[in-house]
Length: 372
Image (cartoon, rainbow, N blue to C red):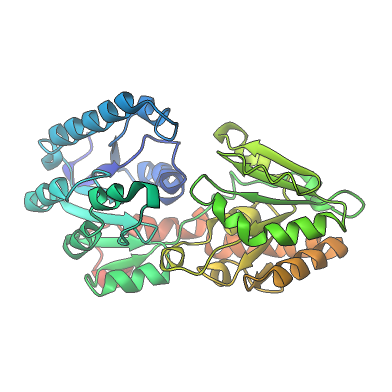
């Protein structure tokens, strides 16, 4: 029977195997925790039924019921937190409202690790849904960060923000598992076949495609390549010749990504974007594709300019020139793609970062030993 010391409660927003943030922040480390003799309970706020309708129009009653049930589950959970030696809190205990559950957690004295991977401390909502900005209580990120025993974040920008509130901060990049992200044999050679330029993202980032749209339209009129979008919504960029859309599905994630030879990561220059880790480029690189990324955010951290891809300014000319170079030099695509996978393995792989993740839970280590 595992001791309380080795019992970990993971408090997170979503059920397992659904949200990319959870999948690549802590879910892919669960086998390592089990191998280290930790027992784990995962407590999502939302259930699977609510997730099925969460981003669909309508279903207001089902969404309200799902959130209400989430608060009920959280309330009951507070009565059992004393059973655990460590609580790993990802992002927040509830998606809306003040940090009531976090207050109870800190009052209990249970060791708490707080993890987040976006600039969620910024009050951010769409123009059509400004009330959400108020309900989310973004200020609670500062409250939680200052009181957690340890905070882990995904990039230096977030690390700097947290360090002003808590010295016990660990830089743990979001990572990819190269045993899962495996390129197929077709990636070994692009010479003599149609190259696929691609982008993957979600409804919240699809607007970023506007940055590269003009460049892709112009290139599609000059070169014979396919432009592939993998997303949960179709941006319908029909003015691009050889445009193709694939709905994102977990079951086909790897086979879909395997089709991309040149992966794009356009990012606007904003405070929210500075909190991102550049995960799209990590996935492209791990899948043996060459990344072309914006020089804003974390693009220059995850891509070595001229070696594993290109880090460029957000101008149509820069995007067109970089992609055109790769289209005209497929042998460079092959060479850079191999370098890209090697680079990601050396810095952003599960293999390399597992010891850092496990060190978060090792209470025998002094803070200086695991703090970045």
